[in-house]
Image 1 (cartoon, rainbow, N blue to C red):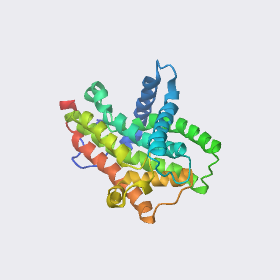
Image 2 (image 1 turned 60 degrees about the vertical axis):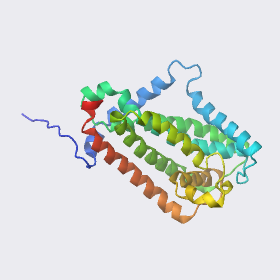
Image 3 (image 1 turned 60 degrees about the horizontal axis):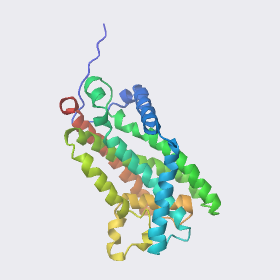
Image 4 (image 1 turned 90 degrees about the vertical axis):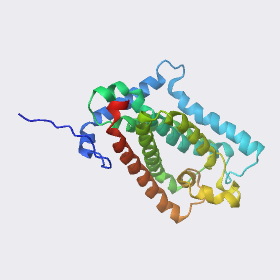
Length: 272
């Protein structure tokens, strides 16, 4: 008779990747359920994915482009801010949805055995769908305004992958810490709100005063936004060091978040 022995993860061990792969159906089911619950009984359904960045880009265009008269790199301010919101929404939504996923599914987490890491990671599925829908709208805007980004547009999937890695690292770590400290649910939205304005999303990096420019230069999200606009709007390419630093930081944050998750997972069933 064969026996299945379930051992708790080590304090700083990476997950068993084969175990995650074997349970990939769980990832898919959680992702699909999130999509269904999010848009069920809504009047306009998935159209919210388009309306949200459109309205945000419109407001930013009025405030930063119309009132503050900030530069937009030679492209219409509406398209400029929409490109930033496209990347920001992917990052923000993964972090928000992943961070609360374990608490929202506490009955399953405490009673059923499966790789818990799949719960926060499943947030990626619904976010990719949202991104794809909004991307179609963005392509239409590029055509309307006659913007040709050139060959760098082929690198857009790379920036999306790095965005998801950064967001998953933070979201996975936050989901594990939230199980024990519910303060995270109050702190994280506040931090993300600060990041929204502390990152050149609605304004160009050139508009930042030189005396505080270093604060923006050490922010990985700044590097990400600059590469996104280079690929989608044909703006000037960021420096080479950012091309190296961005994937390195994404990998470090992603695996760092997983290690934190593994550390806290040992006590999920006791405190959730």
